[in-house]
Length: 143
Image (cartoon, rainbow, N blue to C red; front, side, top):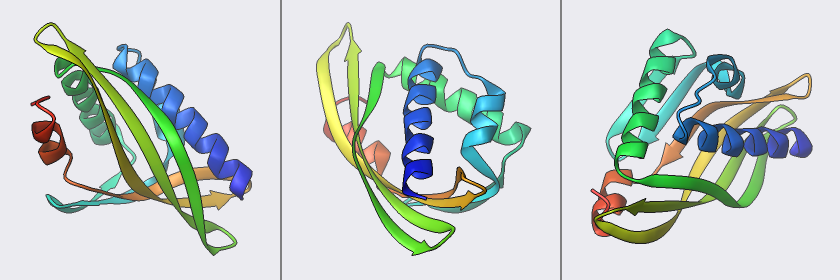
């Protein structure tokens, strides 16, 4: 399971950075997520489906990231907490890099916790828990 999850997050990181450059591959996006998922943050808890609505939301999200000057995302740490033979909690440390004409290069470290399911050696995200992204961006002067 561990290697499948590590491979998932290598693909996730690469996908994120290509999407920041405007190259969002809908099939690749679909392969990262389970058919249904949950998301939790201080803004609330939401459930969704891996469908056209997710693809539209992700495209809008990456456009917003580009607008605020996100230059890249890098995984700095990946720690797994197994739940059973098919599920784990992946604690992922990220480093985000921002730059704009009105902002010196800024680097922000943060962590997101992903629920991952591995079936037939295929790992997919079925949920995540994140901190208050907007507050973090405000604290660093990004938004």
